Each structure stands twice: as structure tokens, then as C-alpha cells.
Image (cartoon, rainbow, N blue to C red; front, side, top):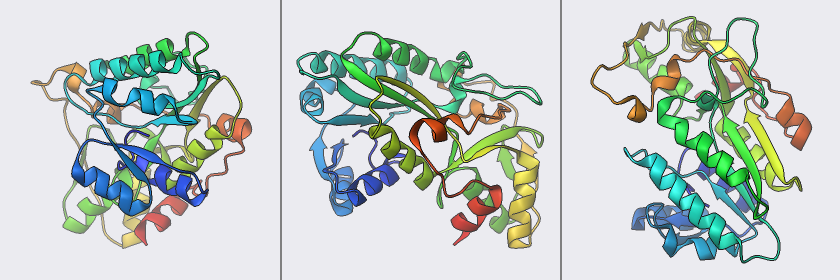
Length: 290
């Protein structure tokens, strides 16, 4: 697994270990190795930038979960090359290698009032994430891989994501600064619920699977802020930031917060039996405030 110490990956590792799986995490540093081992997983030294050193080991596993990213200026090139090498290594298997690739809700376009994004909605990715749509298309070709692509909504945990960021701003007595407007709609998913979907996808025998992962189909930034204000008894102001003028759109990782999106939450449940525990904003805020 790549990204096993990240916001998405760490809960996936924990859930897999609870299920009794043997988890091997790709570790670029000693600190990452120690974190993986402390969680109960094994660590395999390697870097997404140099896949030749680890893809053979990965291709010998029952399944590969790719949740890692460098967020460097050449992230797209790194990701494509790593997946190319993995696919080539998988050609030597007798059975297709099961791969779960992490896409994202920002591969889809914004949608107007009353419209919903589904797995069948054509991609219209932000420049910074265009490489993902190209990589998904490449991975989907051929019969070397049994591919599932999971597109997380905005991931919420106790320490990261919009709820945690809003809460920190509120407690600091400062405005919540965001690229979004108060009326912008965000779909949300709790990190441990998302991990459950990765496990559910692993148990599927389908050759091609695409899943949007959201517990909350969509809530406006203003309404989310009001829920958090009510929970803590403090006011929270929203401050919309303009798009930076000096940043290359291909490296503008936060532009997606300005997208207004409402998503279908039913397909992933029907296709995998996934049952997210936190399916309302109130559930999310209470769980992440403990």
C-alpha cells in the first residue's frame, strides 16, 4: 500500500489490520517505517519516484492500494510512471492484480442546483488533477489489473479536513479562510467510513469498479459553519480567498474547494454493501469533536 501513513491511508491500514490482513506499506523514510510498524503493519522501503525498486514486490501481493501522492510540481509524472511500472510488473501474474486507485471528487465538474454528480458523470478535472483521469484511463485498458477507483469526497478526520480546519479557526477566534463562497456546496466523508469502503471494494470480484465515497451528499459552507458554531457555542466567520495570481494552475492543489458539488451517495452502497456510520453533518461533527 502507498500512502499508508496519510489521512486516507492510515485508517485503511488500521481497518485492514483489524480484519486480520497482512499489510505492507511503502515507506520513503525511517519515520514512515516506524509509524507503519507501530500500527502493526510491515514497512517496505521505497519511493513513488523510483517505482522500479518496489513494483515487483507489490505485484506479488494479493492486492495493491494506491493512496499515496507527492504533491510535488511533477506529481502527475511521478504517479503515471509508478502506475505504468506496476502494470508492467503485473503482466507476469497468472491472475489479474487487484488494484484500488484513489481518484478524487475534484475530477468531476461543479454542478448547479438540483444536479447530482454520479459515477457516470464525465470527468472534467482541475488542471492540478488532470493526470488522474489519464492514469485511470490507462489502468483501465487491458486485462492485467482488476481495477477499482475510489473518488473520496472531502475527507474529514479529527485533525484534517474542513470540519477540523473550521473548528481550529473558531477556537482561535479567527475567520475560516477558504477558496469557497458561503453558498458553495461540499460533499463530505469521514475518514474511517472511507476506510470501510476500501475494505468493501477489496472484497468485490468485479473487474472494473468506480465508486464515489461520500457520507454527506452535499452541504453549503455556510450551513456547515453554522453547525460547527452551534456545537461549540461560538460564531465562525467565513472569509473567501481569491485565487492566487502567482500560482501555476497545474500546481494549485486547493482550487477544488471553490467547486460546488453534490454527489450520488447510493451507488457505492448498492455496489459494495458499504454502510457509512456518519451519514449526517451532525454525526460527523459530534464524532470529530470527541
